[in-house]
Length: 576
Image (cartoon, rainbow, N blue to C red; front, side, top):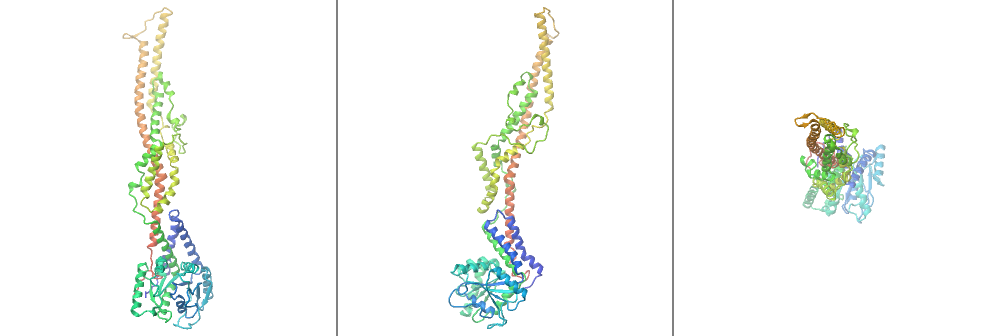
């Protein structure tokens, strides 16, 4: 028999209630990641925990569970010290749960027990006698405990089995009644005892009908049963040999049940065990979280960036910026006699709705930029982008369980459908250097072009005047010369040639500036596309993985929380 040492009440309550607090947090964090049926079960458990604490916190319910023929009803009578449950050779004998109420409880305790049985939907109730009519000189399990005799857990009648399963999930202490014939039955162990392994701290095993075995057979059977229970995770459950017919072991069983039921935190321990069992099932369903990805994997890969840039037309926009700058430079530094030709070419940025009005120059780019008129991506570019998105997502979550992959992908699906809108908005918001001031040398070059054009006009007008005087007025005039060349010719040709050379030099310088601006804008656009991808895919994916990691940590915390017997706390465990 295990010895039990009490721990301070505050510590017991905090330690037992902690799994339920973790479970409540798990339901919030795991929404959308955990299967819906598990979340519903968790909410049901939390609601039940609140109801159980309010209904009758000072009353404990102990249930006898066993297979057909295990002698539950006989053991029920032995524990009660009176023939309260029907016992017969025909099976099943127990068709409805029967509750044995304390013999002389206080009115408050009696009312609480009645409310608790109403909550459990147990209608058949009997009152224990003041003194036993036969057997050991003891009655029941104490003033604060109610004993239930449940229908057979392996009953062929479905309604009987359903009642036993329902109450097994609600009572505070589980007493498994096994017999030499069926103690190793696979159905009992696989469908009932093994799934309740987390409830070892609120469980007792009664090995009934030991009077049918010889001493050596009894020891071998008990050892084999303990081996089976240990293999199923119930290492610390007491196995008490008992005979309801002869009374052997009944007092020891009653004392053990009283010790478990009388522990102050037995109700919380049962609820905590339910939380651990649910967490173990959830961890099995979603699998173990793999090791976190390397830091290099946390960034958007180059393949996805390249595919997105091609699909959204980053190169098209960057080249249009360079072309637009060359056109504008032509308006300012081009050769004045042919400058009008540059106005015949359409600005590609204006065609893409990426060029602001002329009166907006110098203003800060608006964050709420309008949509662009970029052409739709080709079928090949669209397919390449979608393939890159799939590969990126798969690389990040490919090691996760299939059910988690499906849920994460579903939550990210809405974002991937908005990818082109987000990328287009990112391009529209990018600073294409269209609102910055023009280079100062453009104004100087334009002033020089105007001055040289005026010089050429003066020379042309001077020559025209000389021609008119000589031809029509017969007044030949010898103009001043620069060497052998008349100054009017020098002014005309010099203005034209110098203007042409200045335009050529300005065009070369403007092309160099356009190349630099194109490079800057291309890098800026790629950065904007990367940020849009991270906002659309990377950040949500990181958030989902972080949530999944937190869910896994909460599940691990629940599954690995203390499973000591009620009231044991940090107590040691004595010998059996």
